[in-house]
Amino acid sequence: MGIRHFWLAKVGDHGEVPGPEVYWMQWFDKWVRLSFYSLIIDTDDGYVLVGTGLVRDLTLRNKFLREWAGSDRCRFTVNEDEKMENVLKRLGLKPDDISHVVITPVQDYTVGNIDLFKRAKIYFSRRGWFEDVVNPRPSPFLNRDIYLPRYVREYLFEEAWNRIALLNDEDTVVPGVRVKWTGCHHRSSMAIILETKDGIISYTDAAFTMRNITENVPIGIAEDIYECLNAYEYLRSISKYVIPAYDPENLNRYRQWII
Image (tube, rainbow, N blue to C red; front, side, top):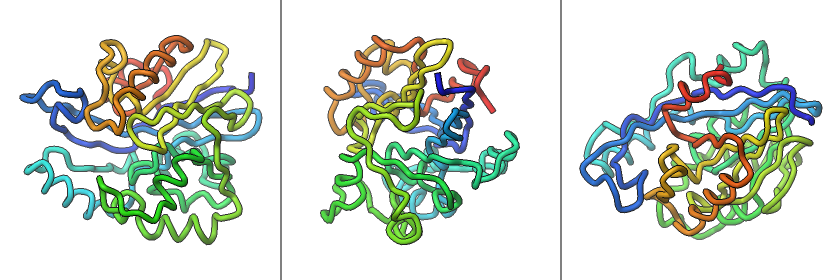
């Protein structure tokens, strides 16, 4: 099978965001709490980490969110237990024990600790690499210094350059761990598909909460809502469980995998 075990770790919090960001054209009078997670997967080919956690300095991000929302309700935070080094320590691991790092999507809540992983091969969506990383055009949505800070860019283009791998729209990281490009949220968004002894378990940022999937409601901050709907249909058809990437209820719903 390739996968021995996997864990889901909360690595930060987003506070509450306006409802229409999560549910397309719905919940205008509500706020929705979101959380951030990483996956740690123990495989026959070494440990795979999906997402490295939030950037260490959240000043620019939280300034943007305060100006955008007119409130501090949706600010990013990370507590001590949620820091990547401490997440790994709970598993008896160090950054050098990680052989493969998968980044999806390319955002400041997935790339923040990428420079800790000095030995790992680093995987991006091929589409996402060209659209979200090296695209010379300014992002219409977010300052690149927020979602891809300078220290991350310098690490990728210098020290980690020879360890970067670009994944096709459907590809395999290691046996038992594959990806499928979804788009929907970002050009760099991929579903992580785990082939476990208990069946297929998928992890996706095309859905922020389980309601997106069960009620077929696209995320409101989508770059393409039809890609969202296609992702939900596909993942429902193949998966025993689908883990929405930012749902606080993951801690209760999937407690058997929480670390």
